Image (cartoon, rainbow, N blue to C red; front, side):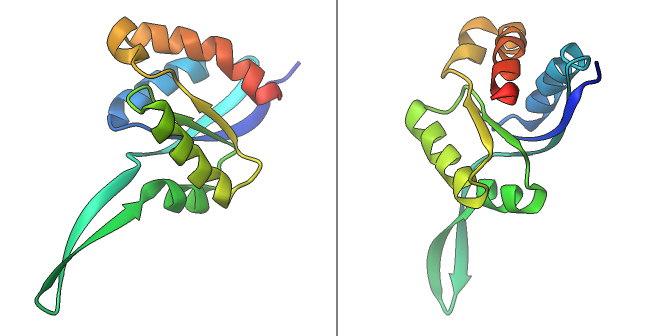
Length: 133
């Protein structure tokens, strides 16, 4: 039986290199079942200060919306540094762009408490259920 997919994945993680590395390990572990392509990472919302007409303004630029529009991924994961509320906001933004996107929030604190191997193990358990849903 051939692998299902490809599934294009965007991650939301303030440590983009770590996200790339960990998702690479998950994709490798599940490659016989699924083709998972990590297309991009975003660090969620950034506050940008703009100077215009002698006035300082604050603008929020939402990377999640822009990157979901750009890549149209089938899947988005929010990392464990986000609270449940922040993950809900991230997922709502992604779903506003692509209503059928598959979403998963890695439990808050998992990376800090148990390390990167625990993240890979956790995702290898959860990803098949998500992708088959």
